[in-house]
Length: 113
Length: 111
Image (cartoon, helix red, strand yellow):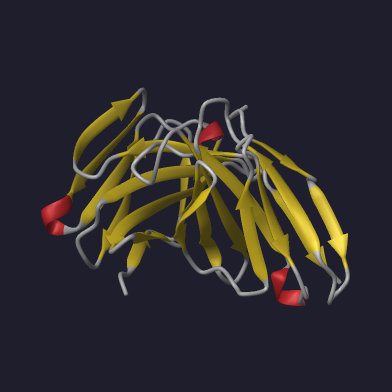
């Protein structure tokens, strides 16, 4: 158990819909990272938040957004969903930034029908 | 942009064998990490190794930053070592950074 929790574990929705994925980092970790893992794209870094502020942005679509709240949990919002958004979405946390060991949550499997 | 290539893409070994996984990157990097994704999907950080050598039990990793590659060694393989091994590199660019993952090496350890 990494100490990082993600909810829900599975999510099935329809095209055009909007969903929110939630992540709670390890106690004491200030950074949260979001990743997308799909069969055709592999693992893609989406975005990092550090202590409530956006720190780095990767291959995140404009239809996607994220935030980190004062209690350091984070949410990833996916809107206008397309079939190609079906993937495993991982959250990770680290104490500080990109040079620290990242600890991954179990992931949320999103299926868009 | 930077390319991260892992080899071999697939590796099948008998329990007890040793293996070497390679990660090549096309430009200088600020950070390199190795991860293991087990057959149930869980991702686990193995090493943070921008340069030098580190060991953790049966696993060790070496990064030669000047030659732009990293190696992950697994000795006396066990079936629990099965899964996909990823390397990921970090590039700092202005106030942003890019985290780029290789495609992974799928390792199957047969009993």
